[in-house]
Length: 484
Ligand SMILES: Cc1cc2nc3c(=O)[nH]c(=O)nc-3n(C[C@H](O)[C@H](O)[C@H](O)COP(=O)(O)OP(=O)(O)OC[C@H]3O[C@@H](n4cnc5c(N)ncnc54)[C@H](O)[C@@H]3O)c2cc1C
Picture 1 (tube, rainbow, N blue to C red):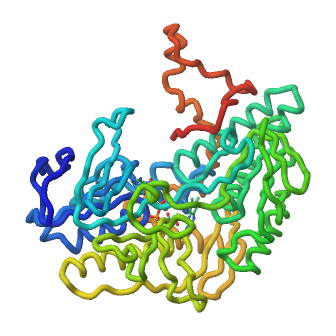
Picture 2 (cartoon, helix red, strand yellow):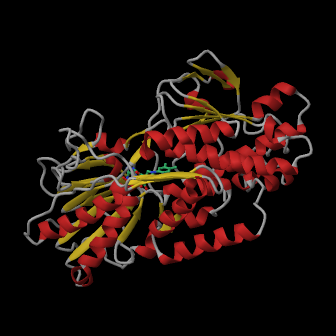
């Protein structure tokens, strides 16, 4: 066991220089990171108490995001704070370091971590030595070299993006309502989503539902004025719910006047005009990109083995292949799917695998520390549930196919049972109940993104004042930021 660390004192007051006999470093505070740390904290309780072991979790945000609730957060059915789980509260016996692992030198068992206190030149970055490494940095949006995408695309992976998108959609309705220019109005009311997996389909379906409802409060916007387009490169959407239910989802969306274009790609979105591979062109101020994910960039800055697609190569026991004291799981890890008859199949990047892998991973780390044999990860995919807006859904779970209201109800029950902590379950249930009793919230709080604007204007300062609502130049320069 190695000693010494260059790291700030932890939340429990361990001073720099004192090292427990085992430090487990968890990189990432998402599904895998949080659930692994939670289990390790339970299983190693005595050793943590006596100072013999320490769990350090490095995470850029102080919370875990329950991503399946992001579409409902965007629709306003759940408030943003309730789709996240505060890590400091649930991981009371772990040391939480807010920061990003920039590099990992596993040969030296050291991670270089930048924190909010790190200077631009890298001064003040932490060097964290460890004994066991759990890599769980997840994935980032997989973009393609589509002209204009980097300038105008909006992602949908974080709570900030979800709430920013909600504000943005309502702002577009304000712009359309206020302008006399038909071109500006049409572009404001055209919403293009690229990618037909659950992130794209659920986000589009929930936002369309919300915007259609909101339009009744505008004197000059009818629901039919809103144009929603889903662009999918393959011949189907929602592959997670199977072929039949995927086709049903297409029919359901088309029945709501949503323009679903299969076997179609986005070729360009330069100048805020979405150009599709079928030759159509849509001037739009909203282009949401959810066309897949790729492993987190930090993986390339390690000395660990990667697959051609950039995932960490793992064994079925969730060890990094051929490497001692390194473990990985979730979106970032290429884990052999032992239930597949096709050799070389990896488990898919989804929450179902991430949560179950975290359980096995924690078990195996503790077993390895105790010199006991580890177990292999094996889970056959149970199917999936997806919401298509309020009271609409589609599900294919354990061979059972459901659609419409029963599928939507199943979606809610399933995710309520899955969202971590009793506290979050109670809050989400309370919000759903209140939403059933009262009308939907229809305001955009986009001005929260610029809290200093009004004061700066009043004080005659240099901060960029906000454009008045309805001004089509508002937020011309990029995707929306987050606000609550
Ligand atoms: C909108 C949306 C809806 C979804 N719906 C479903 C669903 O219905 N069902 C389902 O099964 N799956 C769903 N998923 C997929 C599911 O959320 C992911 O598969 C799951 O989150 C993967 O878990 P993970 O721990 O690997 O990564 P994540 O949960 O993404 O966690 C990774 C964490 O690592 C952090 N991190 C990244 N880089 C670093 C670094 N360098 N240093 C430190 N920390 C770092 C990230 O900030 C993040 O907190 C959905 C995803 C999205 C985006």
